Length: 279
Image (cartoon, rainbow, N blue to C red; front, top):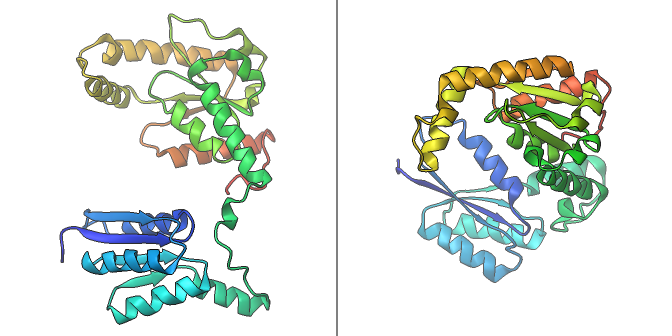
C-alpha cells in the first residue's frame, strides 16, 4: 500500500459535500494517516473534467465526485471505467432512487444548496454577530445575543461562538479576568441565555503553555502558571454562581460535544427552539 493515498474531490459546485464525506470516511481508517485530499470545485465542462480525471489517473488517485450535471456525471463514469480509475459517484445513484421513489425528475442544477435563501442569510448574520461581539469587544451586543458565553481564557469561547453561529445562533462571549470588571450589561441578560465555561487546571496549564510557545514566548509566564489558573478558576466560579447560569466543563470535550450540550440546555429552558438548527 502506498504511504500517501490521494483522493480527488470533483464537483460542478463547491465540492463541500464530497469533501465532508471523504473526511468522515477517513476516520474509519485510523491505522493509515497519510491521506492527501485535493478538491476541484466548479468543474462544469467536459474539458475541465477530462483534465482533472487525467491528473487523477497520473497520480493513481481515488476520484470522489458530486456532479449534478447528468452529462458530466456520465462522462466521469465512462472515463474512469475506461482508464481503470477507482471512483465513487456520490449523487447519481441517490438521485435516481429518489426520483424512482417520488416519481419526480431531479432538477440537475448545480449549486442549489448555496442559494441565497433565508437560512443562508440567518447563518451569515449570526457569524458576523459572533465576530463583532467576540471576546467582550462591545458589551452592547450582550442584550442582542441569543446566547452569551462566559469563561476564562482557553475555555473554547470563540470556537463555540463560531460553531453555534453556523447553527444560526447569535452568540456573544465575555472573558472573565480577575483584574477586569464584568460588563454591567451582563446583569441584564436572562440567566437562561448565559452559559459558563470552565476547564480543568491541568488542561488549561497545558493549553496555555503551548499557546505561549506558539507565540514565541516563554511557557513559564504567569499566564500559564498553575497558581494563576487556580486564581482565575476560583474567580470565574464565583461570577458564574452570581449569574446563576449553567456551567459546562469543556475538559476532554470536542467543540461539537459541548455545542450539543449547550443546545440541549437552551432547548430545555425554552430559550431557543429552532427547527433547523442542525442544518
